[in-house]
Image 1 (cartoon, rainbow, N blue to C red):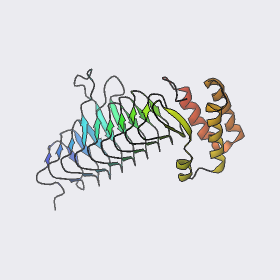
Image 2 (cartoon, helix red, strand yellow):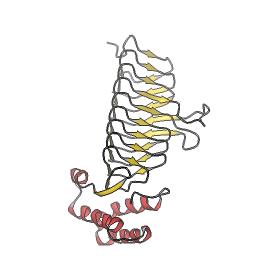
Image 3 (spheres, one colour):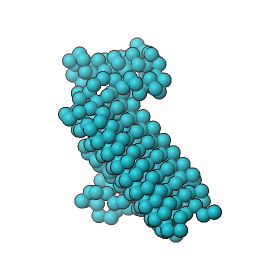
Image 4 (cartoon, rainbow, N blue to C red):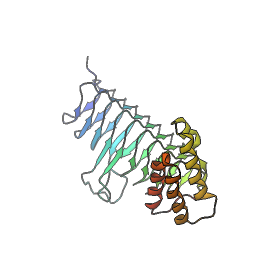
Length: 262
């Protein structure tokens, strides 16, 4: 039994594993590759140099691999790369990268991406993230592993959302969001540590205590960012179990260009 609906238009140049399912009226271009076990819903358009991994479920009306919404784009050969086991709901739009950046928009594995999410050119999305309905990522945004972004949230160009962070509903993200933090609002404000998410991921009591101490150093003691970073680095010796968490936070703070939500 064929897995490609007879009304779908799949270019002969496309590379689809024999197990891929393609729904009615879908359009798949010549430079698309889709891995085993993935499914493409009705009326989807997948174009450009787009690579999609294994066991992804792409719901109806998604548009993946279209040219960037960037006036500088002049037809350069860029790409969209999507990993494995992602769920992409209705009306999502993911664009190709640009030569002004790495030339690729990348989405990792096991992401839960709800309806009407826009992921613009050159975004880098990690693994196990959740983006609720109408999340909009402008160009060059980075989203760390396990981050959660609430619905109707807009993220400004080149902003970063750290691993394990939680962004609340209808937020305006115009500063970097440090790992482990919960933020929301317009203007954006830090509300505390994402304790619910961290506990769901089985963070130990010692790790949680160290992360709460990072929050205090950053937001409760009136320290400069450099002073807070020095205090955070000291937590690795006090709590060796949290050394990786400390390194993650310190590296994030040290590489911020536009400033952090504070």
